[in-house]
Amino acid sequence: MRAALWFIALFGIAVAVALFAGNNQAVVTVFWPPHRVDISFNLMMLLLAGLFLLLYLALRAASAVFALPVEARRWRAQQKERAMYGALMDALAHLVAGRYIRASKSAQNALAQEKSLGVATDTSGHPTGHSASLASQLRSLAHLLVAESAQALQNKSLRDQHLQLALHNSAPRHAQEVREGVQFRAARWALEDHDANAALEWLAQLPQGAARRTLALRMKLRATRYGRQTQQALETARLLAKHRAFSPAAAQSIVRGLAMELLGDAHDPAQLQQAWQALDDSERAMPELCVQAAARLMALNGEAALARAWLVPAWERMVEPRSELGENLRIKLINVLESGLGTLDADWLARIEAAQLARPRDVNLQYLAGMACLSRQLWGRARQHLAQAAPALQDRELHRNAWRALAVLAEQRGDQAAATEACKRAAQL
Image (tube, rainbow, N blue to C red; front, side):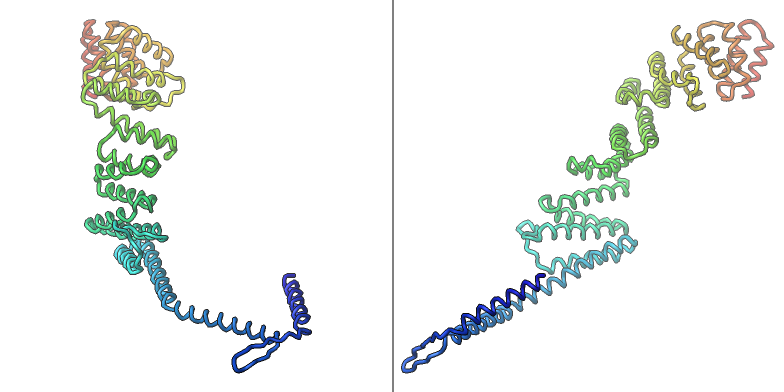
């Protein structure tokens, strides 16, 4: 359709020219003393059109001739740019393939090609003009590739040199994302060198938004764990769990492990209470943490009443009908309660007896009930519980303690044969 319209327009122009020029009798007289030249108006128009076309072609030819040096420089610059980007891609490919020496050489070749392009820079050395951002990013990435290769080759001096150059060329006004990437890599290299303080310093230099990314939090978690900064590691693990960086089971396991480490690092009851208060409510309800905190408090000669208060959530989980508490944790809980039986109050005694009555086949609860009665000087009930529990106990320590307690009860009532037999059983364990 467009071609048909062009043909119609061309035919219209031809008809208009024919009508105008066909019957045009005008004459143009040119006086050039002492000559006089008479030409038709149509010929004059053709000559002017030809002269204009000739002048136009001459100007275009002159422009093309004078533009040849510029085009030559542009062509050379394009070839250098292609070589530069090719070297950068080669460096990345060699780095991924594990050819670190070749990657370093290719990246340095890209830097040399970029330098030969002659990008204008300001007084501080940063590129200026339209290609400023692109040049900054390219230089930073090339220096980063060299530094990465040097890190793999354990060439620390070369790595640090190109790391500083990458930071210098990634000014915030041009390549903020590249600068953050360089800082992330520097923090990772510090972690690979097991330098937790250096890694934390690099992470602290990140902007607020970048510091809360999952990658930054993961690296901070590793750094704080390397540096034995358990409190910061726990807070970081909570943020990672909130961001769903781990599965729920893995997040709970990591948080629980760090919290147990935090409780284990306490060296006096006051420090332990401070660490306990620093935990979240959900963490203080974890049976493992309850038992760990109470056991640590008893080991530090803390208040037994406070330890029993911390054990309440774990105790409630243990006495549930379908409790999933592990056997080792049950025994550890019983050992903690047993270590504080000297100050056992009536409420806890009633709680222990109620749990034993609700689960009469649980020999561990029966043992605990017997030891609790023994501490309260309820000799008959203590002997009844311990005599039933002693033969069935699986834990060696509880088994031995049960026979020792039975020996004490036998000596108290004057039954030397039973006391001797109980001592013999305890000695065999």
